[in-house]
Image (cartoon, rainbow, N blue to C red; front, top):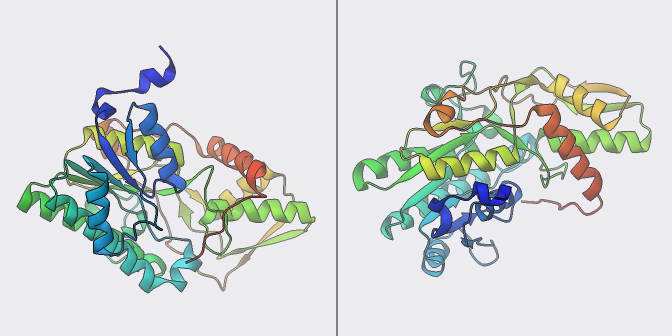
Amino acid sequence: MTSTQATMTSFWENQRVVVTGGAGFLGSFVVEHLRAKGCQQIVIPRSKDYDLVQMDAVQQLYRDAKPDLVVHLAARVGGIGANQANPGRFFYDNLMMGTQLIEVGRQRGLKKFVALGTICAYPKFAPIPFKEDDIWNGYPEETNAPYGLAKKMMLVQSQAYRQQYGFNSIVLFPVNLYGPRDNFDLKTSHVIPALIRKCVTAKEAGHASLMLWGDGSPTREFLYVEDAAQGILLAAELYEESVPVNLGTGEEITIRNLATMIADEVGFAGQIEWDTTKPNGQPRRCLDVSRAKQLFGFQARHGLREGLKKTIQWFHRNNKSLREVTF
């Protein structure tokens, strides 16, 4: 038996699955894992064909695709700078996509809806590690609150629709993702791809120093993208409640130590300096990941350094043809 055959399960063989955002960073890995599990009918809506912010486009997607299961990964999102520049757009677009996809799914008798929330939904000063039961105990960090709150509304909708209509949906809250195929555009990328690109560029240019945002003190937790894809599909197959579930590793690292680790991996030996006039973002992020393990057996396989090595190798192979992301 091949490794691919071993990962196939009968659950996926006859499922017709829509993966919104399936051509994107995380979505591309989810689609690959679906195919490895034996799923033959996968629909990946493209934004040029279906603007999921618009209700008529959502209705058309359901008519065209006739899905049994929807995995909603599409999002309008970026790093701190992009969040600061687009608070209104990030709120509206993410809110409307999630709300309308769930509502039309309910109307059409969809078997299951898998929604991806965000770590940005947690309160700014949530106790560490973040437990799912604390998700409502405070306001999110200001720079990404509009995005985080818009995504968190899917949790409210999931619970309300299960209670009133018996609609089967789940909402997962992944920590910061990274890995091959990520967005490395410095204007819109998240911290790991931004640091990789900055360190590689500084090394190639022979710079003696590198300036980074904030003071380096915040902590973050990172989940390798293939682990995230595996967790999402495990939950899609095995989890049947609307109680929120974290996806992560349970390990945190300071941005300062992360920058040092990435600089070491790419061979940048210069000085790292910090622009303290720039925002830090949320002070700490680290998840309690016990619920995912208990409910559907998910546990991340990649340690941070291993995942960074794979991501940096991919960047070196592809940095001449990287996509640029604008809003």
